Amino acid sequence: MDNDIQRSVSLRAARRNQHPHIKDSEGGFLYGGKSQDYAMKIIWKRGFFRLILTAGIIWMLLIITVLLFHIWSCQSSVSFFAALCNKDSKVFGMLNNMGLVTPGHRCPIPVADDPNKIALPKKRTPENFIQRLSYITEDNISVSTNGSQSVPLFGGHQNWKQREESFKVKLTMKVHCGFIQGSGEEMAPNDIEYVKKCRFVVATGIFDAYDTPHQPSNISKRSESLFCFLMVVDEMSLKFIKNNVTVREDNEGGQWVGIWRLILLKHQPYDEPRRNGKVPKILTHRLFPQARYSIWIDGKMELIVDPLLLLERYLWRGKHTFAIAQHKHHRSIYEEADSNKRRKRYARPLIDLQMKIYRYEGLDPWDQHKSTLSDVPEGAIIIREHTALNNLFSCLWFNEVHLFTPRDQLSFGYVVYRLGGLFKPFMFPNCEYNSIFILHPHNREHSSKVEWAKTLDEFKKHPELKESKGGLGLWTPYPGNLDSVVLPSVARTSKAG
Image: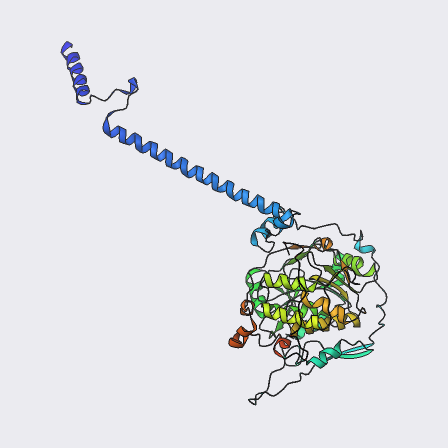
């Protein structure tokens, strides 16, 4: 037995002699070169994981910081920071849907408490200035020098003399107002029959698949039965809606998305989608001729106020017939034009040409001495009674959009000015405008080739930049001498504008 003990001690001593730098685990030592390499690998792995974890935490904190700054800038009353907030972005739309941001400059609307207690007007507003208004439906088609005949234009080939005469209000008038025969915007027979019964209309539109349908909220049962909710779409948008939203069909072939009845317009008259969108927006009375009242909202907006309350607040309470919001930043058309050029909303030389014509025809920049609160509206919501004077204004406003640029805010104040005080819109505070809807971002940004032209010479060298069916007045020589016209200087009143 002693031999066995001695043999065991000898083997342990031999092992220790073979590994002189190793101490057993009981002594708290690490053993040999290989074990040291293994320990270093463990240390490097732990360091690497800690580095990744730290970088991830820093990255998350950075994202949270940026989002918080974005929220703060969108809520800020300081114009410099408000200008940094892109309210058309998907980030803003996501934050808005989550309730983390609200549109700035929002205030309560003094609407009635109960739509069921609102008394509807028994009579239409008296027609004091126009007794009979009719529309030109056949185009003045000319024959070009090469012998080819020009096609009908949706807004017609209105000449400068006809345009001038259209501003002279008379008891009986006949004016251009879109919908020239053979120029497009055809409605299906079943939709024509459906809209004939519509006396109260909430209308919106989606063109070129820019937007997704949004269901209005806070709609009373009375308004559901009183109003027709009509969504005007082109063929591309209808296809997009069917691929992304549930569309049901009724027994008469009508197509519905929730409360909205889809109204398809075939054969769009313009090659500029934004100009196509002005047809239902401005010419609502032409699309729905039986309507007595209409409320237009842009396709990117979700209505959150009962429409009957809107009619009572903005029309009937103050005995108005046309209501539209003031622009948040601009009151002068020339300032709005400058903003459009800076933001590349349309070709700069074409905006300048339109403004020169308006200046030549006597439109002064807005100031506090004018009878109107502003020359520039927020056109995304229009509330109106379809009187003859309002219908005339809408026709003349659309004619300017057809003749010049599709930026309708540039021509609104001009048409008000040309009607010489007969047309008096109620321009309500912008903070109320922001309380009527929830704003959603477009599905994609719009861009067209015409926006990038910097000089008129570019259009001469590159005729493909021109719109073939709109902007007619910009391609037809103006009868006046515009060479001496100097546009008013513009002082930016807000960095956000």
